[in-house]
Image (cartoon, rainbow, N blue to C red; front, top):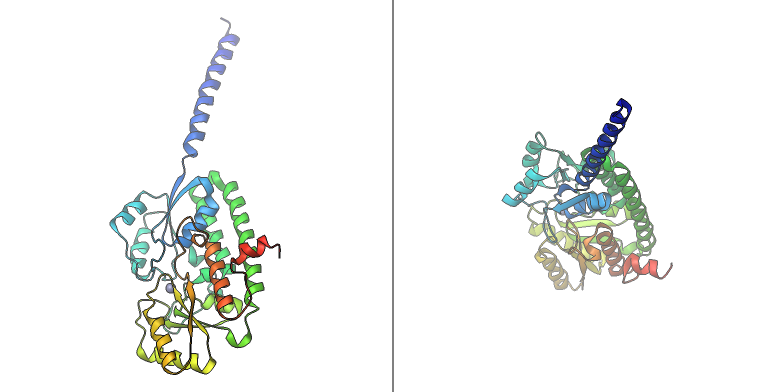
Amino acid sequence: MSLRRIARNFGFALAAVCGFVTVSVTAASAKPIDVVATTSMIADAARQVAGDRAKVTALMGPGVDPHSYRQTRSDIAAMARADLVLWHGLYLEAQLEEFFLDLEKRRNVIAVGEAIETSKLLSHAQYKGRYDPHVWMDPQLWETVVLAVRDALIKTDPKGEATYRANADKHIADIEKLITYMQSVTKTVPEKSRVLLTAHDAFSYFGRGYDFEVLGIQGISTESEAGLRRVEELVDTIVDRKIAAVFVESSVPERNVRALIEGAAARGQKVEIGGTLFSDAMGEPGTYEGTYIGMIDHNATLITRALGGDAPATGMQGKLAAGS
Ligand code: ZN
């Protein structure tokens, strides 16, 4: 066998081996990365951006209150296995704060809510030295969080960069459609009715973005108890301003809202429950309200209709279907 022939055979064999290696590397990188998120909203952002490249688990399901949530044993096990852990920060997960501050010294942990410039955040009288964490209520701010989720995914799995960028662009385009819809329906609510009264102070960013005065019975965290005096103050407001509807929230018990309705009734002002808003958790998985866009659409549509504005009962989907 000539040297050239040997070299050629060796080259062929090498190419075959390399080919095999390449195939197995591709197969290995196709295994989804393991992402754990605290809230369902963050998990949705991760799913939208990662597509098939990640298996995303949310620690907090529908109806779960992040202000009081404490990690379980299985949460700790899931986070120990994860390639990437996403939490909100801004003191939303108040009971997990120390846990995450410690975990981020050792693991790939990102507080995605903290990507937003502080100049765009709202402060709160009862929350000294901290910001209002409910930034998902303003989809414009949420876009920054989606980009933070994208960047965290790229850092964790650089091979997926093109996919993550394309998916994030698509999701942000969908959020822009949501913003256009929200602007068009919320502006139909009459000036005098633009008061949003809810169980806790979760809607200030919505109020700022879409021009509603927002009043919560409880403060910014559900951990603080609503005082009798606060309920009386709000009953005064309902009576003075003839507010027609107040709202309950999926992740907060509705007893305080009931106290308000009874208080107003005793003063001769009939006020109704405008419906259940998704404040700090999305709806059931597999439903439209179980997505970020569906959750915010649901809230904007419900608020608009209950306060005398004009929005299709089926929300943005109905509006898109009607071609308007
Ligand atoms: Zn909250």
